[in-house]
Length: 303
Image 1 (tube, rainbow, N blue to C red):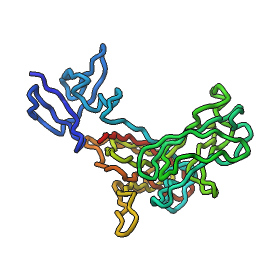
Image 2: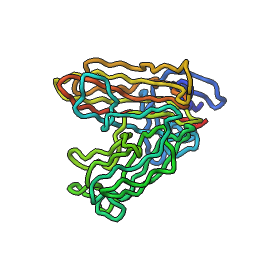
Image 3: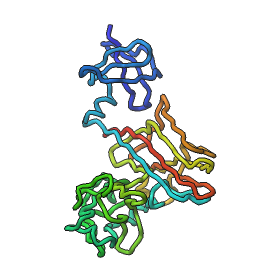
Image 4: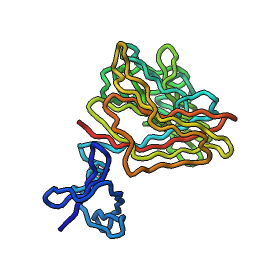
């Protein structure tokens, strides 16, 4: 009899099924490897062959239309003793619907322009005022601010340099200076860092689940400076489209105190469920101005 492992979307647990769909066991950790074009379980001790069709996470990883696997990462330099989002800009803007706004690239380096040697175009990802996933690209304008987006944004959770005037190498990055995304009034929403090397990509350890989706956090990894303990909070806040009290509370999902060096968690059962229109993300604080990084994985299901 063939025993097929399957991820259960509602819980993140693993169950084993026979050909007739009967459950054999649950809460069993599994790992896979690809061998000669087939996917095989390598834990527990006796591998069982499975097909791509029998493992939901594998189907998603290969491009299934049932969902997506999202890798989020962020960092914060010189933390203070007050909690702040783990983003290079130190902010993750979360306005109510009435505060949705068009955005632009802030005036910057002369080489970061539509015909320059630096960043020529920046692409934004986030949610519009309805909570729908949205992506839009903006041409840079060097020492002038760019034109504003046609989208009015409620959240921005990713941006990157999508066109550059330089074929980048280990000694020459894709943009000349920090890229800052702002409102026309100058309020910063996100940035792409250049400390050490032009990163080409935002570092935002926060996410908001789009409309008609839900998901689970599968793992996370935290790093800090040695000898500089940091306190972390993973938070969630549901129902971001609420316009009047009573509002859904901002709630702690995980709290980790006094973290030094690095800490990784890869639980057998994922954190969640996180419903559509839920903010999730990491806050951190610490004395002696430590630097931190946060990396987490998120499996998202389309409804």
